[in-house]
Figure 1 (cartoon, rainbow, N blue to C red):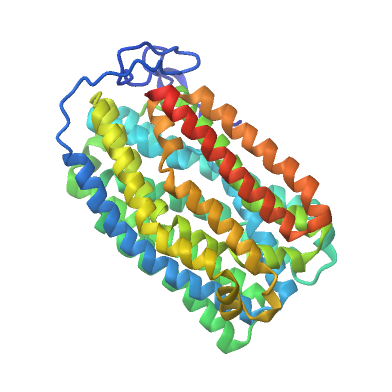
Figure 2 (figure 1 turned 30 degrees about the vertical axis):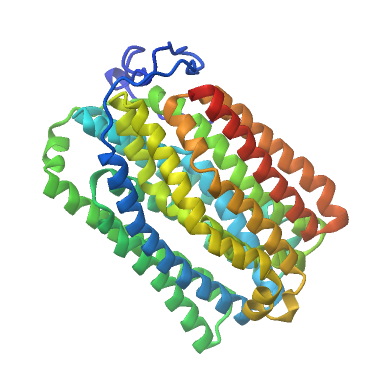
Length: 472
């Protein structure tokens, strides 16, 4: 795992890298960061932060619903505009992009929001500046290495696709999305810390999906090929990141934070951030392996048609995580502020209220994608994807199961139960790869559906057990 580095006095000493004292009466082992379960309430909780989080998340839910609807329409148009092998190649390249994005971010883009919230609360502008600059520089460096690596080793990355028309240029174009999307995620996290949900609404949920829809409409009207689609996706992503930078600059200026950062002496809290982001990386491994390696293995064992059959239903199944993804943006900053104030009751209340809201609001989507999977698949994608209906029902069950249990993994990380999270995530990765290797060769996309669904269920059950015994 690559490390954030700092020169000279920029690297904090051991006393500076300790996480805020846990919100319990027990002690924390500085090496494993495991929290003993004798949790007690140390502050009075009035529920105001939880209510604010729910309201802000509700606004983001509206935005994400709008965004997901546009993205869903975009995907349907792409599937109908491209041939099955073309869509399979496009989906395969995006799987490589997702894997590359995980490698160059190392979980730092999402972990940053927790530390930036705490540093902002404590007015520690030295580390606030160091965290922003350090993570941004790391993404740039690793993103450049990734692009060069894919260019040099493109035959290995393409595998049996290297003789497929347009496969190589398609991958070389789309790999530019890895660092672009990494910066997009980082900037989203920054805005959740420093700005209101309204600042995120237009950029993330209106402009970005609108640009991609525009690219697809031009693709259809001009009867262009898959390479035009790839170039358009990259251009839309770059424009969105540029706009994010402008918004963030304005927000920091209005808050007065920009002037304070200019006077700050930059300190990169490398070890503190890395200790926290290790479980984020292993969490990313779980979802990347479930969403990328299955496509890679399907292409290797069964061909592009099976890749297309499997990947085509994932956006529809992903509707079951619409609410969860919307609430996640504000959950970490709010929970981290409660953690810093040792507000145990506040974290408990936030977790369960959020889980209940997500389970109830998501249920109609689950009912539609599970019980009506056959008719939904035929209506959206045509009869050539009839076999995908069963995969949609199975994956929808797994995603809803995860949503209904709430932010168990995020809460464990905020409490500092790092070792357990790492072990559980690595077990899920191993289980997913093993299941895919056993099931995909004889069963194709059906095997991928079984392996992925089982992994999601087992992974969440283990995290829920850790939440009960690790935090009380």
